[in-house]
Image (cartoon, rainbow, N blue to C red; front, side, top):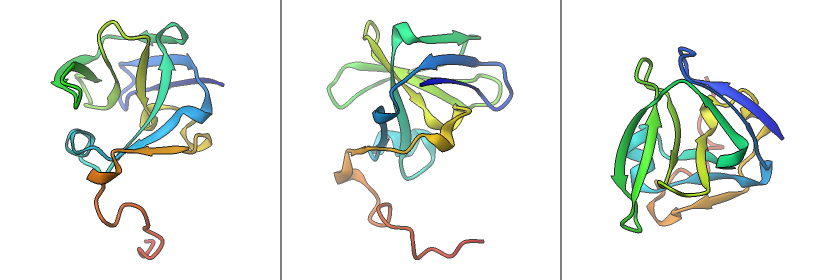
Length: 128
């Protein structure tokens, strides 16, 4: 599937080809803290199928494997763009910056031991 997207202010743009089957929810505590949300939604993309326009800021953290993970965001508006391991073949593109995000349903959840207790079922939460 061909996708495109941008950060909130439009300074960072991208195009990619993805498999919609590779959309995942991450409940790890790093994703919770960095995103300010109960989980983060990503789609895995092959580097060779991804084209970035603009230069995002980079934040390097240690992943659960102990290896450095680069997390990128727009320096102007702060929108999260993607994360990756240096030299890796794939990256994790953030669902919120993808134009076609409504068409992409997660098929897997990871780090569920770190999930907030209510994160799996919000059907009872009143809609405003």
